[in-house]
Length: 137
Image (cartoon, rainbow, N blue to C red; front, side, top):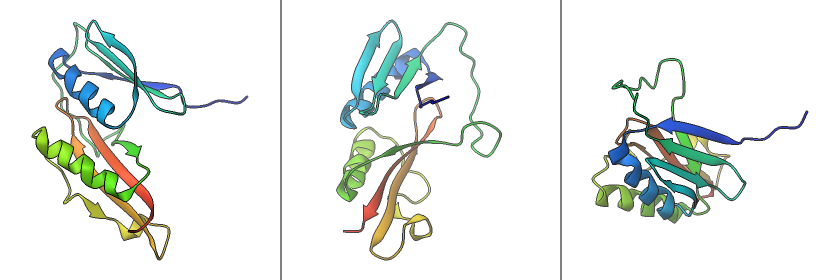
């Protein structure tokens, strides 16, 4: 059997769908569907993320250290993209978490390379990382 990543659905509040639309447009993802409280975005490899509001959504908090998904990471092609993403977050009043942006030498591939990231929480409490892995500039 051959498989590949297909999609992930996130349940979100209707008023936050616009945030995900702006974010993933900024990140260069293609809009697959927008409307009726639902947003689908796709990456260049055919994977997609779906942000869906439904009438039965519950008010719960996300425990990153509990069972389930810790965070969703989106990779970039250039180190400067991380700084641009940090600026985007600040312009949208989104707090950057865990002292980011920062280089993480413990995750890099060795000398001359970097793992450079930002981390933030979406308005629905989903933890995201935007990360560059490659030559350190």
